[in-house]
Amino acid sequence: MATVRVAPTADLRPDERAAVRELLDLAFDGRFDDHDWDHALGGLHLIVARDGRPVAHGAVVQRRLLLDGRALRCGYVEAVAVHPGRRGQGLAAAVMTEAERLIDGGYDLGALSASERGRGLYLSRGWLPWPGPTAVLSPGGLLRTPDDDGSTLVRPTGDLPLTGTLTCDWRDGDVW
Image 1 (cartoon, rainbow, N blue to C red):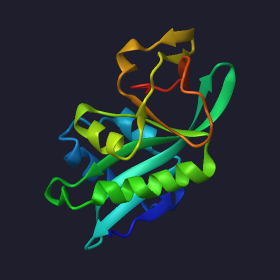
Image 2 (cartoon, rainbow, N blue to C red):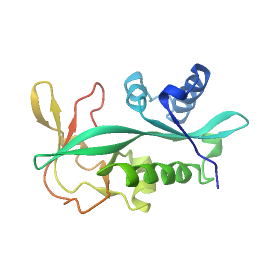
Image 3 (cartoon, rainbow, N blue to C red):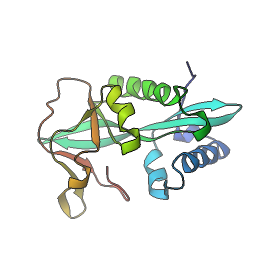
């Protein structure tokens, strides 16, 4: 099994941050923008390295989600990627195993927004599509996010009911 290094953003040297960003740009084929990068910062980075270079990455950042009037501490998974030349070696699974350990031990639930390409990985690990509507608490008030209704996946860590409107906090770029 791959060794996953867990490091807060603050502990990454500038060259390490640059190498992670380079990996993400490569893995997402140029579709990883500055907002996506910003979303991955400030929490814990999960990094698998080979020959001193990152070949797999994920991040768990804290967000606040609202459900039925309750504010939930959420471990939100961002920027899960594997170098194209290293796919199929279990590296994404290793990153997610560590992300799930962090979420299960420290949050009310885990959440992420899955692409069609990545969805199978998360579903095979027990992540669940949020069955209800999604929304965002925007600067202008509560806004429904119907385009995210099928792609928002959750990992409850307790007896959280999986009903109602799940609302995320505001951020620039993709809110989910």
